[in-house]
Image 1 (cartoon, rainbow, N blue to C red):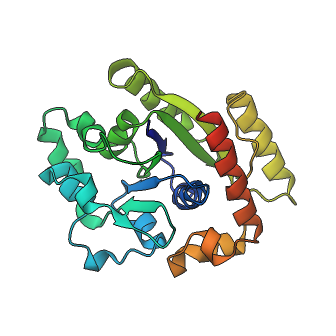
Image 2 (cartoon, rainbow, N blue to C red):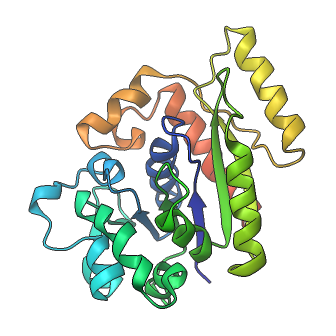
Image 3 (tube, rainbow, N blue to C red):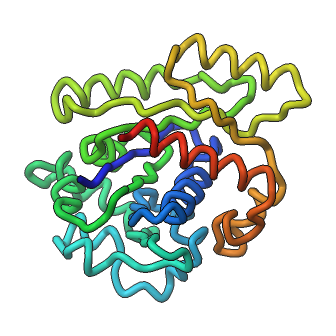
Length: 252
């Protein structure tokens, strides 16, 4: 059975796209078939996987609005076993156009039915609009990246409320796979304090793996590569390899 995992936080800059790309790459490196769905109109996940958006003949907009089969739009990446449903800025129009669709919240879920993957990772946009709701409705489980900074938990209450509404009315089976602390600086007491605060708010749900601040991790997307291919010996690479192992254990 395909395991569909949404990666969401309405706050930008928390490592959501970095997590999607690198978790996907390491899951595929573990001999799993993985599809990444770039649900963000900025298309950073697509770019970070080496997709040239100007050369796309179709993207996620065509899947959601035109009804094009997802399999016809999915593109292979340089990582064996890892494909992506790419996005471009055209996807922003879907926010408006989906409003008039019947079953608008279920559009992505319907499009992802019966695909030949072990894992589907959905990179949700940094908002709580109809695209993010589609991601949460399509998913079996949710990962919330939280950066180890002062305002880490600001606004997370809104996301939790949205998840609760989705569970109540649209997807009762949506579970929280885990909260991931990102951009952690082990040399500062602030990062440690934030980590402890996150664990108090989400007891038993915080991943043991912590993603550090890492220059190589920040550089990799500009080369269109996951850290696995850019610098597999870096601290960031080791962290995402450990996260992939945790995700496979938790999502059994």
